[in-house]
Length: 132
Image 1: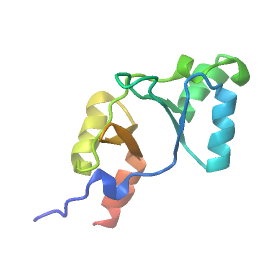
Image 2: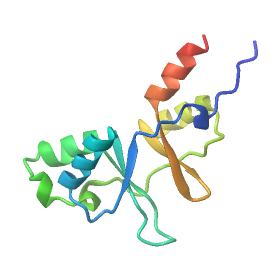
Image 3: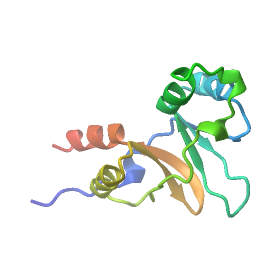
């Protein structure tokens, strides 16, 4: 049975916000609330730098659980960097395997060195279930 090819670009979400790593966690949360985002992509500082990623779970683990003040912690202090990224044309089955192999749940989608989306298990699983 031939399965229809579903690419990352077909299911990626736009629930992310690009921010400077010097911004505070508090500032990041304000922007996420206003834009209904779920993740912060920390912008590159220069052309040869890499993107960083701050998930809500990172804020919970590295700020809240450690009783730190969100207005006194910068995003760069809690971000994951470098992060694995995927390209928009990747088959979501391979993307899911990549996530499983590296123990991640979300990744930026990068095309021509620019973030164009965010992919997570949520989008992949929901799309796959629609195809069955």
